[in-house]
Structures are given as C-alpha cells and as structure tokens.
Length: 173
Image (cartoon, rainbow, N blue to C red; front, side, top):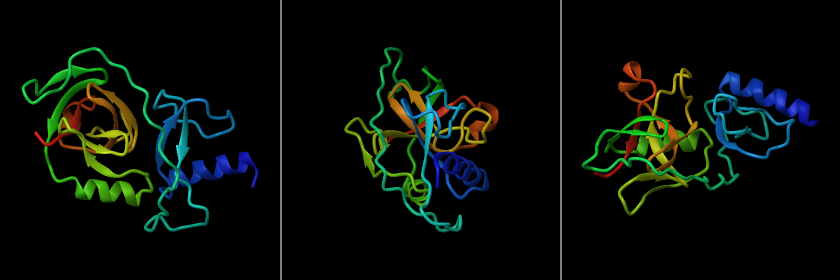
C-alpha cells in the first residue's frame, strides 16, 4: 500500500474509532496524517496491521518519544492546589488509575503506569491528566503542557463542562 493510501486509510480508521491518536511528533514526512488541533506537528497513529474490530484493538509496539519540555512559571504542589499553568488552570486529584490505564492500553497507546518520586502519576514519559476530551479543546490522548511536565489527556471529569481549559493532574497527594 502506498503512503497516500495509508494516510487515507488511517484517517478513515480514526474517524470510525478503529484507531486513536497516540502522540504528536515533530519532523514527520509531509505525507503523514496531521494533527492540527495539537499544534505540535504531525500525528502518529496506532494502526493495526490487519483489519481488527474496534472492540479488540491491537496494542501498539511503537515507543513513544520522550517529551522535550521547558517551563519556568508556577508549579502545582500539594499546598498550591490550583494554579495557572502553561495550558490553563491546573488542579490535582488522587484516584485509582487502573481503569484509566487499562483503557489507554486497550486503545493501543504504548506505556507503563508508574509514580514519579514527587508523587505525580505517570504513563510512560507522560504525566496522567484529566482534560476536556470532547474535542472542544482536547481529544483523548492529546499531549498538553503542564507545570509538572508534558501530560497525556487520558481521563476527564465533570469540571470539563464548566471549564474545558482546566487540567486535572493525577497525583498521590
């Protein structure tokens, strides 16, 4: 299959829910599918090699690139529980992540759950975040910059209805 057919197939599969965006990446060839809503370059997709029903996606074996990140403003902490971060208001929550992690793995997003020494819950190289994932501001698995590092929008919450720019960061605090 040529690259144009692959790009078209990927776009159609993403629209039908068979594949999901995995991460944004710079310096990808111009004939790859784009993710303009991310503002971060081209989009890499977890695309099954065979036709697979949406209920049983094949996990991605591609590694996620390490985020490059720099931020010098206010940082979310247990005592500063609501700050204005690089992408909007940031708050934190501490809930069981097993369901969120299982859904992310089932969607084919490569990574493992772990907790950083400062108590921030991580998936691979990314901070786990709850965001508006309706497509108004973000989509599920978009990468968003936070005061605690590059985050993956893996979850959502009721806050998104009143403030779709708010980011709720998963922590152990």
